[in-house]
Image 1 (cartoon, rainbow, N blue to C red):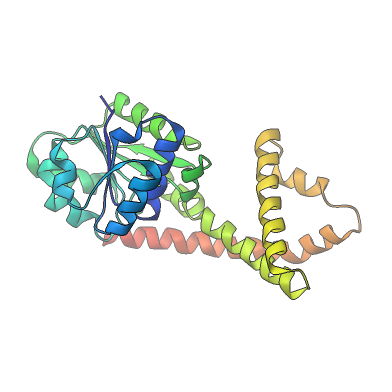
Image 2 (tube, rainbow, N blue to C red):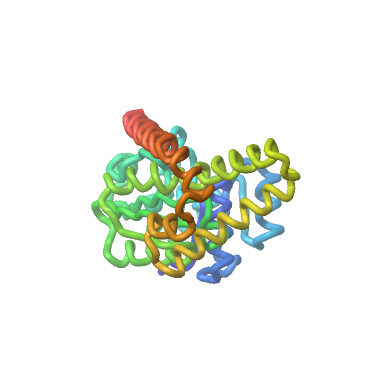
Length: 272
């Protein structure tokens, strides 16, 4: 029932989802189609993943796929849905990953086609391309338990997937959805400072990235609280505790401001 998956949008997130779906083995590449207007990206996806591709949304929806994942920017999603409302309404399940665009907005755009569109909203993140992402899932008014279970199964192969309220989905998008960029920024800052302190650039980058991956893996495997982990690697009167004392106030304040800014932007997108 949910065998054929079509992604409208092959950008960073659309490509990550396609890679995650195929890489996890939950769907064969032959059952995945990616639609995008940028042909070089489509050629890359077809070559690396073996998925079907097309440049026309109407062509992508003509076969009435079981699941359509709208992986376009929030600013253009209403236009894409409005222009293809009839075709989308005939598909089994419509999944949106657009930040700030409420389920009710999408249902409203599809209401004119009659019936009750099955819509589910998901906030994923880029790390799902390598099976380490995370997704918050919110079922629409007419989505069935079977619809929601199918989305949880699909996205759950690429990392943890939780069914949440829609306000919680917005919060997850600001915190977890933005997290890959926040972590990359921290790695970049550490790398630049390491180079300034005398480390070779490539060595600094590789050592810092490898350590970051190791810390995350240890925390995942052990279930240890991050604060306990910090205490375990900090010797009394040592260099780490001195560095943490200097860093924590600024990092905490910076994270607070970053999440507030992301939430504010989410609200702006919801009003646009």
